[in-house]
Image 1: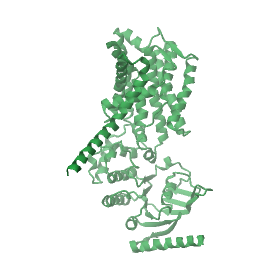
Image 2 (image 1 turned 90 degrees about the vertical axis):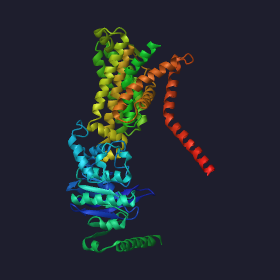
Image 3 (image 1 turned 30 degrees about the vertical axis):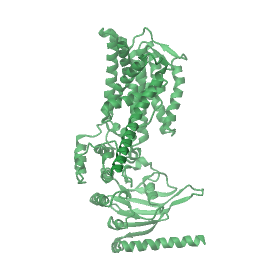
Image 4 (image 1 turned 180 degrees about the horizontal axis):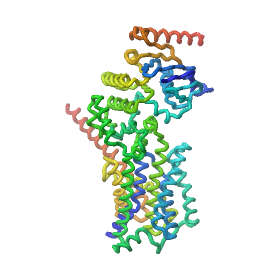
Length: 263
Length: 304
């Protein structure tokens, strides 16, 4: 479903701030794969998402989604295939529009531009979809999005990103700004939506436990490349302690390398 | 005095659509668009020339189209050439100064004395008084355009435009070209402004190259007054508020200038004072509330 082949991206090339954010990065996800991504700050996690979403052009390599080469496709065009949710609950929705208007935005493309913003049929569909969140939002569809709590907003954003099933869903620490209980609830909703509709998903998280609980694959990113790719029995056998040990071992090696460079 | 108030109401209706245009860019798209000072005179000049050729109704349509073209230029500067919104508006406005002179064949003003206008045609056809005729025509045109704009903002395109003013990043993530939305909005808003300029030219019986300066400030003032009267609850009220704000602004100015101690050239100063007071109400209220709360708590703590 998603293939990255030898993708590289360097920021500020040729300056003192030069940063190789992705170096010869390759990844393949099968349809319905749900991979969690962990890694320290600056490992290239968000850069990877930006490369997939097409925020800028990569320096080398090739990206395909569902067999289609999207390497040079514009961000707006690619957005049709990709649902993306950010850490900041304020980022994914429009505060002065109502809940139903926000959903209508996401449900949009394909409809005629001068057709009514929300048809009766749409409204019914939105109501049913919201009801599945079990937050009582289906009775508050005419309320402005800005009045909802962070958790509610993030849950609605999740609905918006998946209202039209995307080919790829990118979750960038989407529960990190929420309190633990709300985060758990949003994660449960995420799991339900992704698994019931078999959406190919990448999820960045700093929570080691949920990186193992969610999905069928865990990637550890380091220095713009995949340092560990855990799946199948090997992943099932791991617990938080085990993964942390692997993580430290990986980081230790990196530190050793740095020491060699510095000495 | 009564005549002055009637005149103010007429002027308010005539310029009502200019305020609507300012509202659309300033409040919905959340971009202050300074093109307005130029596009209002563009509407006036086009109308003056075409009306003098004997086509008063066509003149108004062309004024609206010319305004849309001006908005398109600002849109191009903003979205394609990435010029900051305020500067883009100033550039178009300055450029329009020459274009407007060109339309008026190099002369700084064109008079329309004795020619038929939509106002005179309506008054002659119905036989009602001049003031009543002006008010009815102004109210009809404003009502019609407000209705069209209202319906437009209920469509999907209208929804995308509102979202663009609110959270552009989310609009792009929804696979919608936000630049295209800005472009359309600037064109529609300046179309309204051009039409208002056209109505104004026919009402005043002239077009003058200098008559546009300060229009945007009047627009802001009227938008703020309209919001103070109609509230910010819904878009529909916001649209109606622009026309009401436009009328009230002209009435306030008429009242302020009617007093003997202010000479006519204080018009702009009074406008600026009105806007400043309107903008200051919120922060001042907040400051008073917070200082009261502080005083109360200090007293409570001292008593305890």
